[in-house]
Image (cartoon, rainbow, N blue to C red; front, side):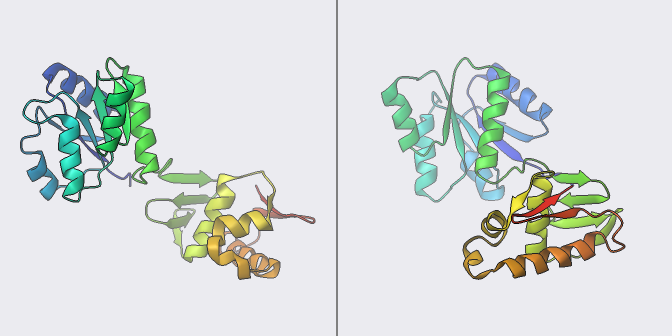
Length: 227
């Protein structure tokens, strides 16, 4: 199931707010809009949005002041500022207040959606794909689950990482050193080549129990290729 991403927009121009809501809703995001900072903090107490788009020129409290306040009281929600303020001092002011990115008005819908997607990825809220499908396998990244012919297959956390790494790099020979870094990470220093071979063999038996597909192919002196 696709993960629902919630975005808050604070923009005092109703037409611009409606336009942003329209384009981001088209991308599948759940949008809540405000014309000022009023009631936003109350909303944040009840909801946990993944991103905020905040205009700098807001009535009552300037946008960067409001974000600075949210940071002080403990909210770490990623923020993109929307503003006509584009000189170096004002940009620096916005970042120091707790902004993560900046879009200068006027901006195109394409720039808006690309910057939103990029920040969501950086913050970990958005996976590049919710599922990866290849031959008989479906890897669900959100639920950390594997399906073989639509039947669930139990994998350990390490086996899931291992299969995900190979599926990301299909048809490319992967060295054992690369696998050690990508899959085992900081714990990989004590993992020898034989342990990697054993882990791959266990995974092979789970995803291809009848040994008909042969996903993994050894590359002499290097490691394995998955295809």
